[in-house]
Image (cartoon, rainbow, N blue to C red; front, side):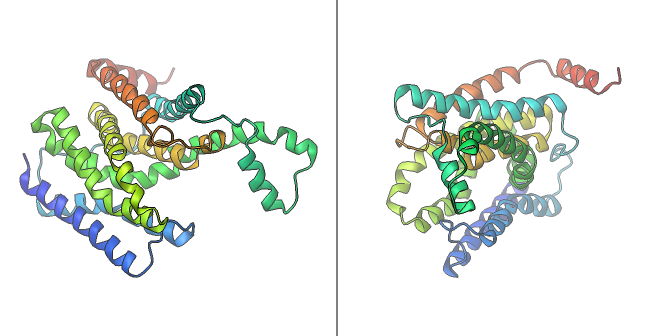
Length: 307
């Protein structure tokens, strides 16, 4: 194992994150409960700390046996599977919580109509209001899918260049499952300052302890999926697309309007139902990832060849 590189990566990545969050919170510049452009830019900068850690470690402790994986171009078929598959898991979650009775699906999307009324400073015309839910349902879904595979993927790339691009291959001598579990634990611990900052800004710090076990479980499942994608395709960019699609659906998807009533700890992107579904998805990805590499390589070659 590349212990020197791993130690340098963790020192830089953890040091910068914990120090940055402490300073920003002390200056009152990291109020995550508030929606503003400056806060969003700060979060983007923090998400690229793992990439900085990987770059510093690679420069100070170069190792020829490891590479960060490809970033571009993206393989067409796996990218489409990710872009469509992630929203399908969120759709399944919404349907399940509705069937169980933990949330009512509101097809009229009253939250969206309320926002439109506020923006227009008057109620929507009756004819527009009748078709607005259908338009919003399709529009928000397509927009969140597009944002996930582009803008959000670009933001997630900074994280993936560090955790899956640099660290994961260096943990693989431990075995894949140990590497997934250890990288998930480190990823979870690295993000803790932001979690506490978010709950502190929302004045709900006492609720964070019930959320952390679910976040840890989701971090492990996402690490299994992301790690399998990274190793199977040797493609860090594709892993970033998956993580970007996940966050786009969690933050900008139509699901928060379809099922706005939360019944913790069961509902939501990090609820028990979501965790169970992503466990199934992780199992599918792992089994699918065991296909012979040569076969997959041939398929990708055939896709890129002109007809």
